[in-house]
Amino acid sequence: MPQHTTGEILVTLRREIFRDDWDMLAEDLVVYQLPLWFYQHLERSTDHAFTPKYDRIFTELFDLDPGMLSQLLVAPDPVAVLDALKDRVFTEAHWRLRRMRLPWPDQDNVAQRLARTSPARYPYGGLLRCVRLTMPGTTVSDMSLILHLPELVYWQVELGQLPANGDVLDLLFRAYGTNDLRPLLAATDLPERVKAHADQLPELSFNFT
Image (cartoon, rainbow, N blue to C red):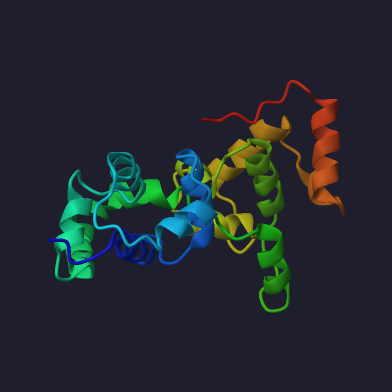
């Protein structure tokens, strides 16, 4: 006999898997054509069994094994079951796939805060960010894989907190079609300057994948 409602299990899963990150949850729900308000309605459900449709959807959404939702409904401690599951599920490779969907902070906002205590010490970060943003859907994790850098190291390079290595400079030279980036670095409005540069060289390609 189920000890928990489907709503209680959804609340537990959201807190344990998404860490109460509603924005990230909403983005993933789009894949299943579920609006956030409707999911929140399901969290208040007093049913004691998931329909086949929602069993499939939430099994995929929360990266569960088939049948895991039914186990959670009857488990004395669903959190303990999920903790045991994380030991298997959250391997480095699996967690990398989920990290690729994490929304990294906006670089401009972070840079403004850092400017008061840790202003950019190295050039090229802004140019690197323009390359990333020119490729729609390209994440910090995508760029770190292209450049063989840990995500945090890449992010610090983009913020100008770490120097650009040879691979980063080679990518920038190819991206902008020049080995002399000084005119771009001197621009007061970098995005506009980069756009003008790209308009002058329409053959440029930012696709490095």
